[in-house]
Length: 379
Image (cartoon, rainbow, N blue to C red; front, side):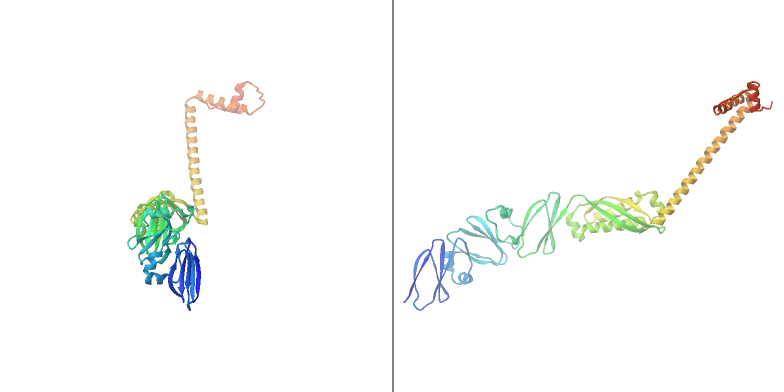
């Protein structure tokens, strides 16, 4: 006969194995164990760590309900249940479905709350509040990989996808969802006005002139759920509709029509693209051509056309002025023909102009001889 003495401290528990099989749990104190011809083994556990991790866990759960009830807090969950494990009233861990674990009673007050998530996607607000900013707490919560936490900004919305299906739209605020047994994806969408640039579009006009156009547009969502149910990528869909409308506006008109009225392109694009976007939950607020780039040879031709047009316009103005001057001279001649005094005044005016350009004048025979020598008047 052989005896073995084992001391278990107050913060410890012992697991007595006889010939490898579980026999009993040893509480704090001195234990004198009789072995005889058996092989005894005592495994000591510190219960300041509540979790009991051992190969005998499943055996105790299934074969020793009395032992489990006396010394452990069990956590036995089915496939649709989640466990919230509290230590001394503080949430410490999220237990995944199908979990089967034991936790020591005694030093740590352990409680496991069971939540059925079969028909529940969202984490209860009271629990979600305990999961935010866990890094600022004295002890982090384990098992956070089983939840999705996100914040939707005030100017946005969140689209909740569950197993590939669009479930609902989320408003601004904090949201938390269970990830267990389902695939959860949340897509954030900006509800503010958004700008879109359709650039580098090479389009042939009706008279076969290649133009390069850049357009700017502004749009926003009117119904986010409708937009994402109708099309896979709403922003790309808006780009394509603007691109097609721009081609329709340019391809059915000549270069002269487009250059004479650039706003015509904007009006046609708005009229064609706005109804199509409205049918998919989007609103086209504005669309305008930023610039029109002509080919190099077309620029030269247009410059020549403009130069010729301006030259012809200048020629017309010059001829008009010459005609007006000739008509004025004719009217002056008619006045002088009927009025010798007016003719004499004109002679004096001419003499004054001539005198302004001469430094010195020598007069012989009087002023009448000068006038008679300059201008001969037929009586």
